[in-house]
Image (cartoon, rainbow, N blue to C red; front, top):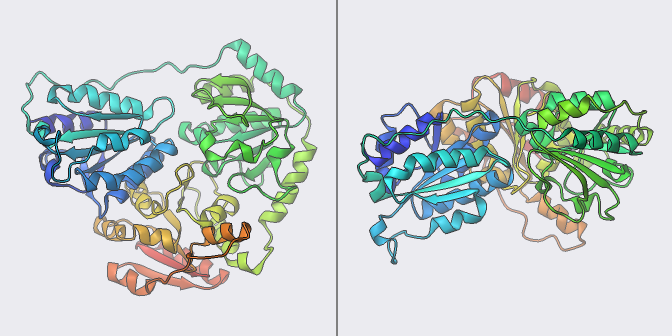
Length: 526
């Protein structure tokens, strides 16, 4: 068999269902092999969209997402989406074609060193130079993508290697491997319980690692048993019900005004599944006085403002289950209760007319969407609105790009979410700028018959940059633009369009869109 056939068989053995991408001359052999495989190749309209689809597929399923591009410009177009997955700890396998080995040593058509380009944004970055090594390389790639801190890997397949003949005795490697669920030593767990007991104002900082490991039940049990307040990062929304008395809601980005900062009030931060990329510790521990009890599957990153006094490394679920049995119930956290009351007031009020419609849109999404709805936010000022004001009914169903924080990932991500979980409704929340970066993927969604709703905030401005310019007392410059007529734009793709200017209109339009069996654009004019 050909090497490309062997590569596809290895992908099949890893349980790959979809590959997102665009073929090119240098990977036509691989495409030919895929044509005889149960793996579904999803032809996208841009390689960046393909990488975002692989990223969100991985977040929704917990399995590595796979994207494919040819050499040169195809490979470089993947890079933004791959970097986005890597910094958000999303396991993605990026496969690229390459020129034949006979011309890699010299200047030649579309030949650039893509292995070097992917090196800093992947955990494993490997060119396949011999067809015989494909089973080992593929198995290692998938192991690397999901082990420790998950992330992206890159495999490069030169066109002449893809055509090589492979002996029949070269077969995919077994993927059936059971790993022991490690947890910290009993002495370390006892010390952690002591730290929690002796702290005056401890608080849980819940991060993306909880979502990745689905440890939300264990977190809620620890909160209940020890009576601990909790804040979540942008990427860990929904861990506690909105009305839970210990839910102090979301932190991240620009700190809240004084009086609304739960982490600043604490003396011990119990960081669970928290990745430093989610919220820079200098924003909440500038004076380095708050100690950190770190609970994660990997050792803590070194940071002067993240002073770890105890690092509990192991399976997060196992660690939390063991710790919950050792902690004692603490008295009610009166200082944090006061912060919760103030934050509730801030969440449910409209301080300025400018924020009225955005807040009301987030409240409507929180109230009207079903528990199994997936909300995917793009990047811009609306990401702050989703992160702070939208309240999901369940954990693991709000996707916010917050590590690399690339614009343009939400619409492609919706396609992957619907493919992976076809019974879960999807709502994209995006700005006009982010939407138009990958709006061409509407055609992909329409071609595949996928149904979801895209909420577009149309203000003809890079509003987040505008706000930063204003906050820095700088001139507001080069942030405005014009937009197409979104009604005509939607019509050209065969997509339903609704435009709203008020909260009442949005509430009605949202119900209509989500309940329809159609692809919808819901334009909110600001």
